[in-house]
Length: 241
Image (tube, rainbow, N blue to C red; front, top):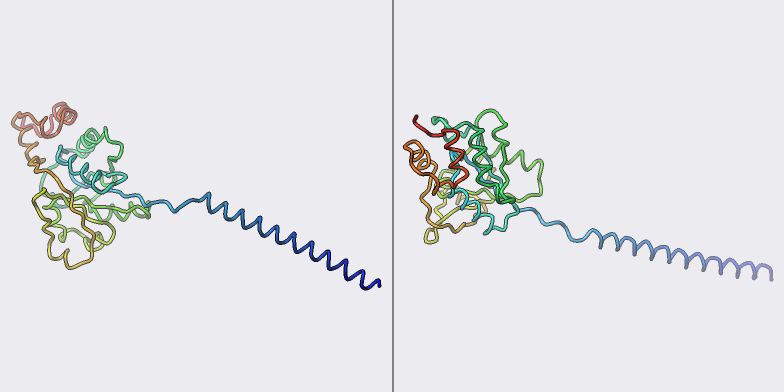
């Protein structure tokens, strides 16, 4: 009888332990589920436009292209990367880097999604887009980059250093007027790439035209706006006198 009673008591204790263990497991599962719910869905990758150039000087067509990329690609930001020593223009004297940088800041000041980027001004030697993109992606590996280009730049893309790696690292956002098709070079067409057409109005403004007007005392306000016009006048940029 004692053995039977002891066995019954042990069975009851085991049952109570089993119920407690089950309750603990349910509580742990509920906690884990709660933590998963708190974490929420995975964060969306940021979409970032990469707009490089000497900007000598920056003008309103630059602004229109950056705005088109921002709107049509749904970008989180456009980085205006001011070239320190652009390798394509090694034979031409540029305005001082600090002036080109200051004018870009003036042009972009009213749009918080425009981000002036001076990484190439802080680096010695020729400015290569691939070097800058590598450095950016080391710091921000989850961002999805788009290289913002005009049609002329796209045509010359195969002459860029490391362009084959560049088109793996980022998509191409290319400006084209409403009636124009993108004319990609054959070397690009032979490789996998992402290309998005940016619809743009026909704008004839250029940095060359701004420099010509400024040198001859012409009015550059329709091309660069009030703020940049004032800066050019105060610092006597592009003046022949």
